[in-house]
Image (tube, rainbow, N blue to C red):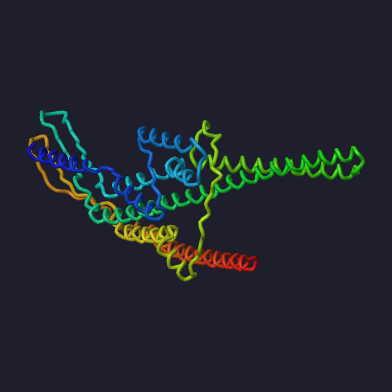
Length: 386
């Protein structure tokens, strides 16, 4: 009975020690905020409580109070975009996987009580798998895989932030120029209508022909068609911006400011741009992390040849009252399944990740070359026009 008590105490200690693990994302979120601030000079906010929901809504309402500028639209998108807020949660998902990867499997205990038909004794047998020994060499590799996945998730989230900024700028500019076009088209239509009236008046005095009246009527109708098309384009652009800003139905009638600044742009040399892209482009960094994750996964599969090795203790008391206590081990002998299929799969995944990285690098270089050619051509055209 003393041995059984010892087993119970050991199990209790292991359970209490295992309960210390928790999932905390403050470090990862601080790192992401810092990276975004360094890249864009902008601040992001992760909506995680009702208090933060209220703070965000209050700021959004304040920014929508007057004509929305481009910078204000970007601010709203970075704190209120629903897709962006959803992907922030992936940080917690990946961090949870990392914490899980570092946990030992729960111990098991089995007990058998045998009651004889004759006699007063009871046969008791207790087996406890107190420690999954194979976790000692598997957990470090599992943690490396999960850590690489978390790091890749961080880059993916950061890329989504940059994509949100880019899409919001594009959507805002679309609304801005559609709004300007609408105003100019309305002015033009008004002038054509006035011309039509003057032509009809002159025709009534015999100074102009019916053909002149017909031509002005056609011009007015064509302009009215253009005006309707511009209104439709403005509505579509505004709807797209509305979604990117994460606004509700009550904010559908927001207006933008017609004051716009267009800063001068420049493009670096192709070699400089490629060096910058290799170090800064998030899609390249994610591809590298994917390769790293695949390599760690391969290492994990190689140590998974012995998948289950458990050491424990066994206690038995027979009907005569004699008791026995001793250590035990449970091990799967890798005769048929030596994890060779999973090792091969991991090797294929490593090679796939390496080739995907090479493909991304070539695609980025193509984009840089094309952008450089377009920029050079536009610069030459401007110089000729000047």
